[in-house]
Image (cartoon, rainbow, N blue to C red; front, side, top):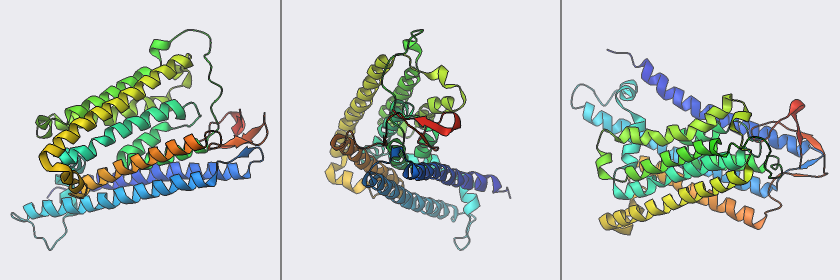
Length: 358
């Protein structure tokens, strides 16, 4: 009998990666907040905002992974039911063989996307992943948030809403960006990092529309189309992690802002258009009750569905917070022209760890 060690290694390696990424980001955020509390020159953001997004992060992680664990058990039960007709006995556990013979990633997404009502819930996560990617570049890089790839990878393997809440906390605890201005020198507007972002947005939106078609649900193209956004959204953050920043700098800030505005319109517009189309298809097929029932129809759908729900709540809460407290949300300095010591995911560091506050 073949060994199941490889299957166990992949499964538990995946769980270990989820835990390691989450602990890495949370520990650095915690360290940053501790430094801010002790700082004599910087004032932390209001605690109520920090607690709000901590609670949303906990809620999103708890709900999505409650259903994810239920999906594991459901998948094993279905697999054992079919295998028991041949040579396996239900009285014994066959976890290793189940992992070896099952592609959990593909199985979960097939269940979550195949079906009009299920697709209505699950397809929305593509656009929230796109929104996180744009925010990582537009806000994260300018605020000096390092290792943005960790947030995107965490979103893909754990939950987009969980990663989004952690990134918002990173923004709350990071120094404000320097004044917007265009630098001199060579105009490289057509070769900026925005070009990779544009490619990532297109490579996410187009597969989302393709997967709405039934011919992709049962064809060999399903998995390649599904995996394309996962890869595309990680390209620029990973490149930034090992190439010097000078190669991915936007010297023309005004032009970059216009491009990002267009990318946000493209993402939101694509989401609205696909939402209208998928709503019409789902309602014609099963009515509005079908949409409601699909959320709890299967643990795989529920996991993605509650991820979508928490994404909506998180982005709405973040919009309300910034709208109501535009000048009192982020870290602020107590005295001008001071430096303060800080380190962590949300903090950009210069030599010696001192960050110039503006």
